[in-house]
Amino acid sequence: MKILAIETSCDETAISILDFKSKYKFEILSEIVLSQIDIHKEYGGVFPALAKREHLKNLFPVFFESLKKTKMLEKRKKNKKIESEKLKKIKKILERDPENLEKLIEFYEKYKKPVVKHISVTHGPGLEIALWTGFNFAKALSVLWDIDFVPVNHLEGHIFSALIDKKKVKKIKYPALGVLISGGHTELIHIKDELSYKIIGETLDDAIGEAYDKVARLIDIDYPGGPEISKFAEMFHVKHQKKLKMFHVKHKKHEFYAWFEKKFGFKLPRPMLNSGNFDFSFSGLKTAVLYLVKKQEKINKNFKEALAYEFENAVSDVLLKKVEKAVDKYKIKEIIVGGGVSANDRIRAEFLEKFEKKGLKIHFPDKKYTGDNATMIAVAGFYRYKNGDYKKNEKKVYSNLDLKYVCRKK
Image (cartoon, rainbow, N blue to C red; front, side, top):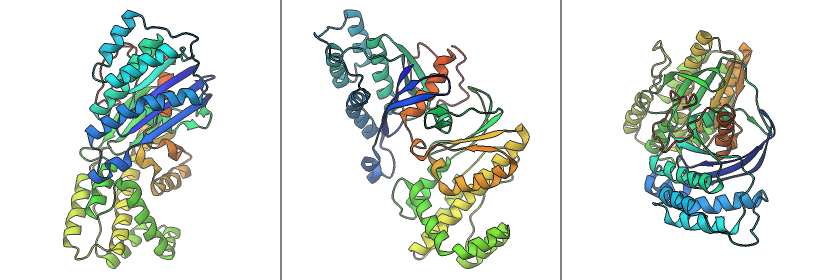
């Protein structure tokens, strides 16, 4: 079963084509991701109107290249006109995207329909202005080719991203715990069974990735902040390797924190560490950094390194404590970590060290799937399609869609 998937929830234009051989085995025929990071850097974050413009510009070339790469482009012997009813439908769908409308009409006339079973596309959450671009493009294609249209929750895609293992989808023992950590989301999800989710904890304000970006701006580090903060934290680790190793071997984390505070003169808060629930709050952590920076006479490289390291300590302490409580309460058998922040080496190492000792399997995405991509949307779409569990006549995108929305054959 061949699936074409489209992802345009933020600032990546991504299209993948997968061929599922069975429930757990598939072949990736093509996966293309065009990032807009360089375009948005000067704004210190994603500028929505620019994101939309780039998606509209990139969608057809990426789509065409994907089919070309898979050798699924076959020219007609003679051009074929679109039936009037189909033409009317796609004109309505793409009324605000005349350029791609024209390109798809020309494409249909020149090329035969490829063997694709259905189209999966992200319909939320994300930037609404960006979501519509991929959603409408996919909708028009499904009409042109007379194939099924499967709307996919972007967050569910990130859960499945951690289960992609080369040419197969990992089998999971339930109940599992989903840990979504990204620029827009920090959530703990009780996964009772396949495609069955209950959010048990979420951020009350800033998401982890958002906090990384804001802290990076405060100390004049380039966007995106997450990878750059981690680089500075790693520099600190390398400089103080012997001292850190000594505390680590002795399992004396509190003594390390005392040493750090004495040497560098500050300690960041751990918001909601002992709140008694599974919710998060990172705005206070960001504010603590703001006040610390204001008091600092000189923001030099050493200060940035120490701050980055302590910031990652604070984030990791809170995250691990909440996850540990959830694991114990819900008798969790496996942990699935997804989202952009799951690429963080420090978080990966601490999760593995803490939970593998308890006999828990931890699933992280391959780093190329931690960011937004269409392969995860294809996999999630396959499972939704296989179970017949998707909204077949979806007409809208949802900027705030979350995993409280579970389709159940609506």
